[in-house]
Length: 387
Image 1: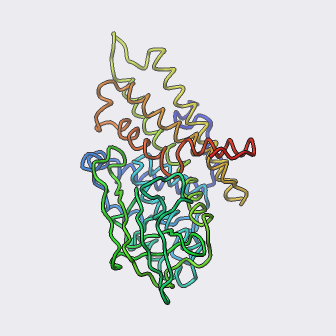
Image 2 (image 1 turned 180 degrees about the horizontal axis):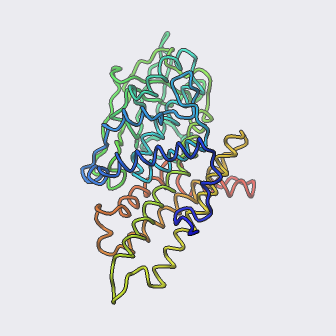
Image 3 (image 1 turned 45 degrees about the horizontal axis):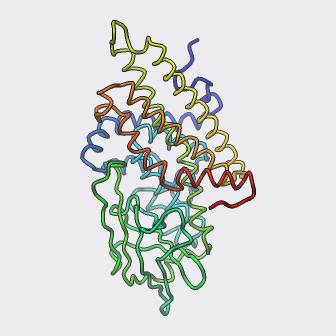
């Protein structure tokens, strides 16, 4: 029997029946609802928010959180497969789900009070309340400890001043999970849309993640009640714990982007005739295609093992850094190679490689740049912090 070109090691056979069902369901959604419109959305710089109710109805928001909060209660591998199939459509779609699930719903679940969980999580799972995550600031994203945004107590409230930058979902969001310096260390706050002094400004002129909303957030004496403070965490371990959750999903997402690029490169190279034969008949093209399949196979195995470790409760942040570094670099290199195989046609958004390549320039930067993750692995190996 011929091997599947995007799964040469039959990784799918290692999935449970439920995991395969999740993958198939999200794959159908991507094929039927995302792919027909995403090129145009990218061209227009528009996030297809009309898809949010369908994404919610499929149980993709907060999918790993307990059912008692209106969530699907899926395991980590299933969440990874969700990210893979969504990013096969576009990084912007996966980013929306990743931010809502891992950076907004997760901290409310992990660090919030039971009252906060009951108030927000069911509405967020249903897509009725959209969240964003305010950690990165304009002066530098790789050093979150150098945070300028601050919150001070004022009676029974907190008053927040500062700004955040490069915030996915910012102008869509009904709430923002905002991290700020306090006299007791960094703490998280649920800032609600419409609170006086809170403003979001969408960032325009992007050449990457164009089918995604990216914003700057501004806080000018924003008064937040004590009931909106996340009570169960202080210090950087709060936001970094959220980022570990999100980065895990990011290790899977680019696999989908790479598969989409390989699929298009395979089909196009078989159809494109040069010097009397299809491009796919040349040794140089076959070597490139084979290398794409090799890299995808390694990334699939890496993320699957990472998911099994996460479900077993033994996952370490360094392992997430290694997988994020490897898999995003893998996908970006494949997108560029696929673009090259398409020739001049590869520069148009009628084909997916250039769109994925541009998107992955953001994915390789956000939630830890490639260099940061390399240094995390280096620190693990040497015991020396080179940051």
